[in-house]
Length: 632
View 1: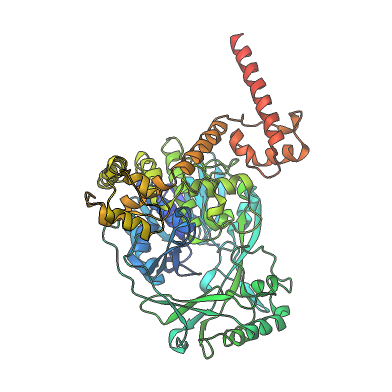
View 2: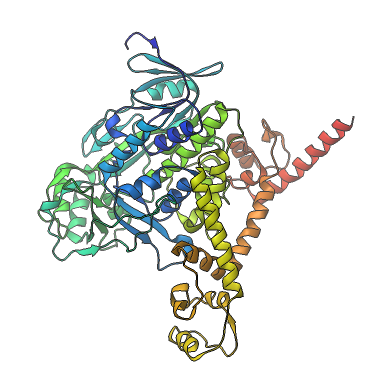
């Protein structure tokens, strides 16, 4: 290493400028903390080394929530998208999720520029190699010997930390996309006392557009009109690209099975645990041997490149095998591979060492975000980034932390899952992970989180006024729907019968008609003469609230009970081995996780309802002891 020298100090240092680091850095700086964001390569800021898309099932919810808090991912996706689609429209509103195919390079360029323009934020190309605790903060050292002193640190290293690439028999130290890995920071973190682990992920090949035969392939077009991610996007853009669908076949399967021994995963060369819900094509073939074919999507990487992404076809097989099995697929018979698929192994942390603020319990001022915390996905990373960045800034400003519970958001669910349940493989957000998903819909993310973002200081006056106006419009439209009575008429009953629902013989409220599953605002437009001119989002929200009123009321009741348990705080430093009646497994898990409250304790794997009853009785006794001692 070069001779060390003192560089400028800061209040918050962010290590990494991927999706987590971007949101952490912007949030921190916007809250008035002097912030430095470090990245190994400035050209990789906001890079999308895997799928060039933002959103998707449950992930779209996260993007909307990040935006509602004042984050940047949704705005940038709206600025750079190529195709926009709302997924799962054939299912209930709880699982409707927005997904955008983005221009990969443009997204990175826009995000980098936003960091460069942000007041109070410095963006630096440097590899942080050492991290040590100081009396009143943290000391960082770069590979070139620059020493920085800071009050708080957010680690958002993505897949760079100890990164190692695998393609067949070949393996070498590397970050994603051939970047340099972060090879030295791991040693410093282990020395510090963090529990690390090894995970892996992968990506498909990128192929040349001109070598694909699109004849006969199924087209996948975007939705019109386009629905934006961000509540700040007042004029949505237009779809610019079409995606295509193809399928593997018996010949694909045959080639992969014949060469499965050459896969580094099945040859035992890869130690890291891969994502359960985004397996490689060889994993799919091995796990689902009876399935005759697997779907893949051919998607553009940008407007100014001929690279196409093959979603659903990640692999770590040798290059010759990749070329052989890709050539068996319809449309790809003569495809030219521009970048071969690879697997990447990296170091990450056990998130059970963290609080719900994403601060490490034993290391005040140290935060983690993104794949470093054991998650996968750009959206999961950005969601953790904004939480960590907000809390780091609030800490250095001596303000109370922001804690989002499971009932507030998918972000709260994500964080709670990580720090309470831990992860055995890279965590991916899914709608099924939330027990309150009918309340946590993407259409009401602003209603749930914008007041929190405003209180913290990330929502502008202009946006806040728009939000208040929208909430008032929703309230008034709901009142109108409940007060409007439609008289029975031939036109009304013809419409009802044509939709397969019962005609009426007396006056009926508009709200009662909207509760019928066969009807909607759109269907009722011809007979709803007094309808005001409002944004479509207002009608969507009111209709959902009316249709699912009973279910929503039930979930809100469950939320109240959950929050009651969350309010029962567990004393810090409790040794659960000393509590009589707890099972040994519960004692071990509670001592490891150290939950903040009864609600969090109830969600720990291995802690039973009987254990929770024991904890409640113990907590009650402890409260009585404190009361008695206080009286004396």
